[in-house]
Length: 164
Image (tube, rainbow, N blue to C red):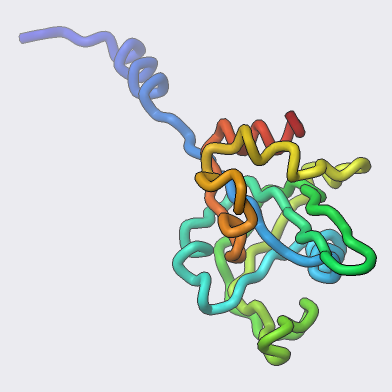
């Protein structure tokens, strides 16, 4: 009969268990960025239920504010970093601004957030494009952001967060 040192077994188990954090970039406009910042909540439409279903407590969300084209263009920024503090909840109360093609959209699938950092100087996104693995087409990179949430690997998350 073999004899095992229980402390060694416990140490081994602890060393094998890895706490996984998921990283996401959440795409929004200026109006809804202000809702996220003020109310500490992120919401998506039913169309993105499969994506937000992957979000868990402790996951990290970078908030990306879309730019504006036209006479007074505005660049794209990363505005803040938040930690998810709740499971996904359904709430139809209208707190977010209207979607341009669906004015009745309430973004009902929501998670509560804890502010980690609101970037005093927002991180300019475009200079990071060449370094990001999730963006496959570097020339038409905005196509990679035509959704509510983008899952990120840890390397891309750190590249964006550090603005380098």
